[in-house]
Image (tube, rainbow, N blue to C red; front, side, top):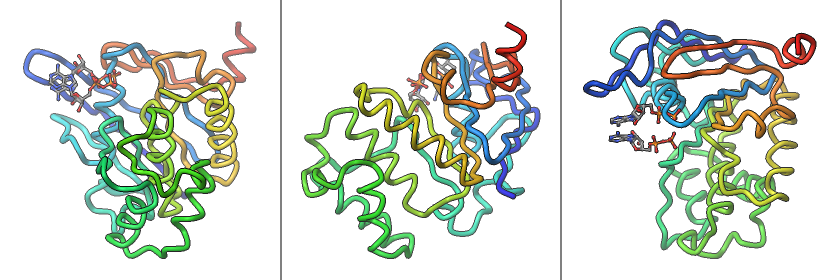
Length: 220
Ligand code: ADP
Ligand code: ADP
C-alpha cells in the first residue's frame, strides 16, 4: 500500500518555526487536502516529505522509507513544487523526454502525460513562453511521468484558468479513485472543499484539524 507518514516533524529557519511537531498519515484512495494560510508550513512539510529539506526533529516516510532511500523515486512519488524548474528554452516535450531519459522511462509515456495534462497541442512550444497555468500543467505532467502511486502537489490550482480548475479536480479525483495517495496543498479551503475527501488543516506549523470532509459537513 502506498503511504505518506509524517511523525513529529519540526523545522525552523533561524527564528521562524516553519513546522512544529507535525504528525499525520495520508491514506490511499482519497484526495487529501493540505490547507492553511500562506506561511503555515505546507511547502516546508512537502519539501521534507520529498527529501529537499531535512527536518530538525521527527521523520517523514514515503512508502515506508525516507524519500532519499527510494529506488527510482520518480516511479514512486510524483512531485509538484512551485520551484519545479523547467529550462525556458526547451519545449514541453523535450523537457519531459529529458526527464524520462534520465529516469530510464519509456518515450511513449511522454506523449501520454502530455495528453493527460492537456498539453498535446503545445508540446513543441518552448516552455519559457508558457503561461503560469501551462507551466502548472507541465509540472503535473512531469509528476505523472513515472506513473507513481504517491503524489505530492504544492498548490497545483495556482494559475489555472476556470477550465484548468475543472480539469485538475477531475484529475485528482481519478488519481485517488485508482488507489493512489494524493496530497494536495492550497491556501484556500474553497479550492479543495469540493475535491478533497480528507483535510489536514495547518496554521503556524501546527496541525489544527485532521478530518474527513463528510464528517465535517455532517457536523456543520
Ligand atoms: P506555506 O507553504 O504554508 O505558505 P512555508 O512552508 O512556505 O508555508 O513557510 C513557512 C514559514 O517558513 C514561513 O514563515 C516562511 O517564510 C518560512 N520559510 C520557508 N522556507 C524558508 C527558507 N528557506 N528560509 C527561511 N524561511 C523559510
Ligand atoms: P509558498 O508558495 O508555499 O508560500 P514560499 O513563497 O514561502 O512558498 O517559498 C518559496 C521559496 O522561497 C521556497 O523555496 C522557500 O524555501 C523560500 N523561502 C520562503 N520564505 C523564505 C524566507 N523567509 N527566507 C528565505 N527563503 C524563503
